[in-house]
Length: 300
Length: 340
Image 1 (spheres, rainbow over the protein chains, first blue to last red):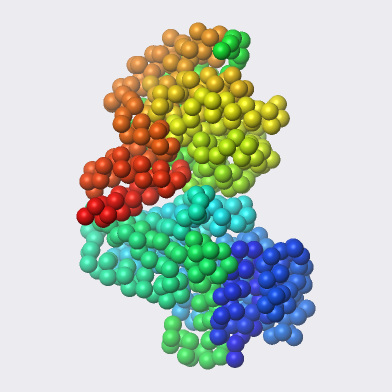
Image 2: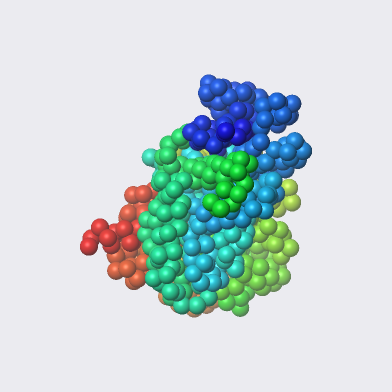
């Protein structure tokens, strides 16, 4: 039986999530929460049969038990998430956090999802779009040999960066840099984000540089990268290594392109897709865990 | 053009934009020496940071020889006349970097965004203004959008707390009429207490002419760089501009002899080779490409054998913006493949 879930936030990310959850066989979106009655996200959710509230999380709380909401996806802001997490956590709802609040442990599905499930975290954080695109690559290198320094540049179309991202751009760079270290496995991490307003909008692209401690084992790194890219493609079909790996002394550089499935914003907005697709994947494994814990763990 | 009697503030870029000329490799001694020479010339403001602003040190933009903090600590305490500014590009540097700069005694914070993306600067402009810094919004690649759109972005920065807005010709592409139109509209739209500035690059040798057009249209702050240190063909050569101002009766408060000495005796020996309008710099100016891409494109040429000219023109076609240095190798590889 699919697990009922709620969407908090009706902006770009929340609305894109809506479409992916409607396709899921394991998750059943029943509520969308917003704060603006005019929001397009809420309108679309209502049209597709969800219950909606424009009263924030307060509007959802009275219905959690009746509607058996077990998982909530939070696509608001770091500030709001801290508040939402407390209120929903009290009702036993598990949270998948798409804001940079990072109350719970970071989750990048092909790298560490199984570990989180085993630890039964009540709140997991999806890092950032740039993190979801690049941390698998840093990890693919660091699982071969030690990475002294990992640096990523995420470039997205201006149109795909909503007001939340813009207001809190420091949280993007700081959260991504920390996760490059903690999940990617680099000793030191750095993240840069660039918004480009070109028309037609450019597809999300990311550059990943790793400085290795020792001389690179080129064949092993290349194989590891290809394996990792294939894993990411399982949930983001438009994810590809565009150039690289390029080896320059102890530096390994990989250039990525992330095309979205065009659920809410068009295909250029791969940054939305990789975030929401990773969150849905995390939610689905969580849901499977509710049903049959042993199976989910073995699968992870 | 009669500008006699106007008073403006000159802002030297040689220790920040000039970092591009030396791949961010100034020693602290060189920086302190040049800053001291500028201070002696009574240049009212000078900027000290990595070429790409606070925390710009990276594989993508080049690692600095020293940290921003080391440079600032070597310069700020030595200044008797000049006020020190820092540059910050949201997406690269953060408010944490501003706190560090605050601890170093910096006077001015300049927050730089691409000309259409002012709203990524809200956090940083807001913080700087609240802390009482002289707070500047710096709209880069200003040639890419029409004056009315630029004015809307400027108004956003003012609403976050900026007390000065710059029209920044990062590509050295603008011509005097464009400068007049943009500065003129900003001047008419923004409150009188909001200052306006112009930052030029000399890729088409228009640095001086554009700066004069800016002053005529109401700009109060003009950026330049002694001996033309800076990305691309450098910034507006500041000692030359100071001399022109002197001829025209524009008041700058700068000691002309001393700034010429700073350029000739201090800046030039550090630079190694004088900045000139090379073929690549001219392409930047002609195609409207971010000036800092120049040395990176040269390096990609050496590494992959693709002419830097082709790389730069392609970067222009793709409407790349400031900070997209990581595109340079990507484009070089793509061009290489399309030719094999």
